[in-house]
Length: 153
Image 1 (cartoon, one colour):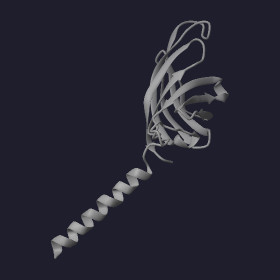
Image 2 (tube, helix red, strand yellow):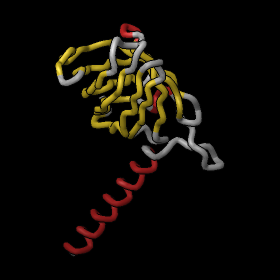
Image 3 (cartoon, one colour):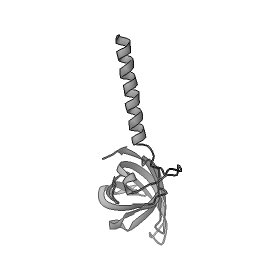
Image 4 (tube, helix red, strand yellow):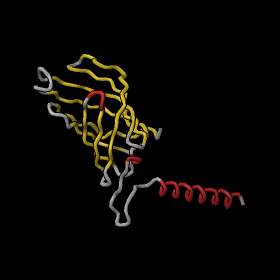
């Protein structure tokens, strides 16, 4: 009798986990193509990367290293917390700034840091678990990612 009870509990857990996986799966159209919205990006995403800054955007070529996390609110707004160094010298530490973003249905979009005049292109996994960022400001060569979601809040 005990084996039947344990087996029944095991089946119940498998069914529950399966239903949760289906509920949190990729957002797709009926034909299987992904569909994304601002809500696809929700939570905290770790990031880090190195960029080359070029004249005339800066007086001389330099290397920019950044690390931090994006917090996307799921509605086109959010916050970045960033530490940055230029040529090995810390210029910002745990700098917090508002961000805004757009997401297209094919899981591409834009991401901006209005206070710094920075803009980026973004490429998002259909399930929202990862994204890759490319800088679009003239005079900067930057690719970050994939950045992974580490929390849904």
